[in-house]
Length: 109
Image (tube, rainbow, N blue to C red; front, side):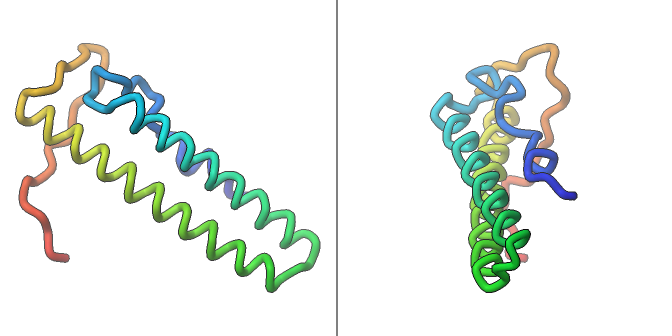
């Protein structure tokens, strides 16, 4: 069975405090969103197992919305980190992998 943790486990705790350009506040926000997503998913599983299909469907919609919010926030933070690294304003840690260089122009698609 799919687990939210396996999906989101590339979370911001992988050393992204300070050195990678994210603030502790952003890391805590992403972690809180991850915990919220996990709670929504657990509630969905309970409702589905109990055969409460209408409530489970509503909960599934909340779960998807929480997942979308988490992905948008994580993507925004990652783009900010990549742009700061490209601009040379981020101190790179030698043990970290390469930073993706994302295009600076906003895409329209």
